[in-house]
Length: 313
Image (cartoon, rainbow, N blue to C red; front, side):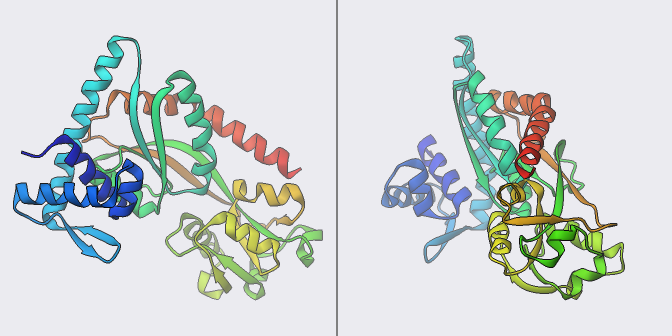
């Protein structure tokens, strides 16, 4: 019979896809992680992970166990939370996935405000790709996620979270900086720094260019970086120009190290959502946070935008 502690270790390893990162997260040794996984594998008579150097992947049996383990651990958490609630307390762990730059700016303020009301709640924000957020929501490894990817899936419920502007920034000494405007056709000859193709920013840019009969293949891409803040720094260094979240650009704009350039007819904006899997019952802590987000998201979005714009003045 599997032990609850073994299932918790299994879930941590399944979420991290690394025994060493699971060990760091649970404050255990890597050998303890391996021993717990091996105990589960002996109990079930199947392998749950395939080992590939320092990383691991779930086997078919591991994938089958995953939602059942989530259900068991969540049920135990709900018991603990229920007993705390009898004392008027809300406590427990909450993991939120985030795939957007704007989400990384907005979530910390929301979490801080939530913990002022519920100080016994421990919240972890895991940054990952949009596809990974959706995958983990569907298989139960995440209860809540922030993403700009909205797929038509009846198991997922979305709440509008934020409207994120994507702007063009150039080095402070760029010829366009003084004028502050450029035409879409002007972009073709400029060295461009971009995110990976699957990133929300890249897809919004591709959609905007398509309205002008242009494609991203027409751009002179000199560098691809998987992080908006790093792109902003590369623009500061004069490597090229870039389209990034207005929030990520706020620091450089405020310091005068980069300049925003308007591109008429290329007003880029993307919707960001908080999502959950309706087939996975929320713990009381998760339900309180879901309700808190729905109630306060507009105020926090306004505060974040106000701060970003004041910095950029």
